[in-house]
Amino acid sequence: MEHHSGLSYEILHGGGAFPMLLVDLKMGQTVKAQADAMVYMDTTMDVKGNLGGGMLGALGRMISGESFFFQMVTASRGDGRACFAPECPGDIADLEMDGTPYLVQKGGFLASTEGVEISATCQNLTKGLFGGEGFFVLKASGIGMLFLESFGAIHMISLEQGQEIIIDNKHLVAWPEHMDYKVEKGSSSGWISSFTSGEGLVCRFRGPGNVLVQTRNPQVFGRWIDPLLPIKK
Image (cartoon, rainbow, N blue to C red; front, side, top):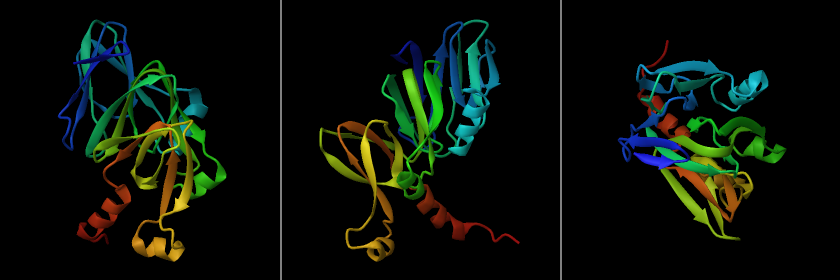
């Protein structure tokens, strides 16, 4: 078991495509998770639906691609364990929040401790139109543990002061809110070249900061699997 920010937890089957998050809660402790993320829990636990931030907060999360409700799992009748799983085959990353807000891609939130607030925030016009994530993304802020899910494995890229890197926007998972980034075409030769090379739009990040990326692109996978599906009548 890992012990961070007052929470004991373990990522089960890590390194494979089907991990789960196991949390060991003390009496009175609560973990909030994405709706339908709970796999099993001890009988000392209670689970309740919660809007989290009220109606406006719930609507904002829904617009940003997350569920309307949180699952609030509380050790109400004594110590116990609960287990959570991501929606898609991929990975789980644990991020200890120190007060630095992070922006999170659609579908990237799995669970967190109570001290981490999950809300929706609006990007500027250019990033919203062309960044691929839409006008709204999730914002995680506060102190505690944040657990992210991804499609494929999660890899952290650490940038030094002034260092730049170009990332395909469909591979983004999370990045610090303060990090500067710009949306660009994938090829320096022009839009036609970007289209034919398959790169499309990318994000140019500038350090310092840590950017979390996923090793698989959901849109590419969708195009790959679509011809294999039965023809719908």
